[in-house]
Image (tube, rainbow, N blue to C red):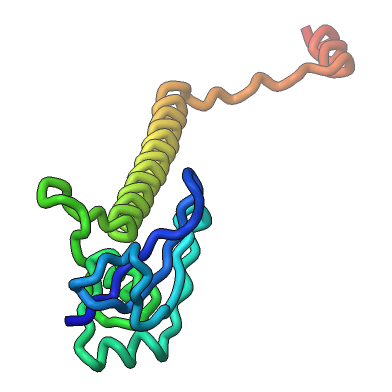
Length: 160
C-alpha cells in the first residue's frame, strides 16, 4: 500500500521536508521513495506541491498522512475539511472561524457604543430643550419702561 507523507531533510535546528509517495512498509528516512511531489519549509511556512502529481497519485489510491492531507486541503488540491493531526486531547483550532467571531464581536461592540453615544446625545438635547422651555415659562416677559428724554422732562416741568 502506498502512502503520501513527509520525509525530513535539512540540518539540525533547520527542518525542511519533502512530500513523497512511498510504500507504507518502507521507512521514509531510507530514501526508497516512489515519487517526490513537493516540499514544505516550516520556518518560512512555504508549501510547494505539484498539483498534477498529487492528483495522479490520489487517483491511484495513495493515502496521504493527516498532515499532508491538511496541506492538500490548504492548497486547494483536495476538497473537504482538515483532519486533526494532533493527539485526541487537543482539537483542531479553526483560526479563520475564531478570527471571524472576533471581528463580529468587535463590530457588535462598536455598534453598541455608537448607539449608546447617540442615545446620550439625544437625551442631552432633550434635557437642554426641556430646561430652555422651563426657563421660558418661569421668566414672564416684562415690558421695558420707556426712556424719558431731556425734552420730555422739560415739558413735564413746564406743565407742572
